[in-house]
Image (tube, rainbow, N blue to C red; front, side, top):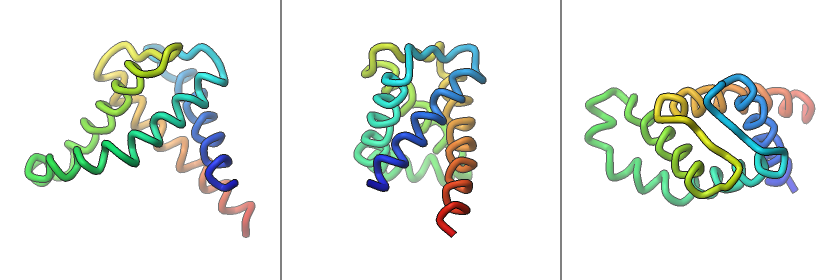
Length: 115
């Protein structure tokens, strides 16, 4: 049940982020939910492999290459999910940054409610 709550929270973050960035287009709430689900699946399966394979580059860039990996995950979701589009790499990079900020804000509200 907690996973569904986090998924809905991520979908809301995707919707808010798509309103903030002009290069991100999303068809509706169901598409945002699918984007959140696919993104969480890719982050659980593919991202750890990419992070492991790019450890030398990540160390040399002081961790900034992880932003490139996050943008690549967003671009991969763009290719997989119909109704969701990102205009380019830089838009995907800013989308990933803003999405993680909004998700952390939503998570902090959720933690306050539990206490």
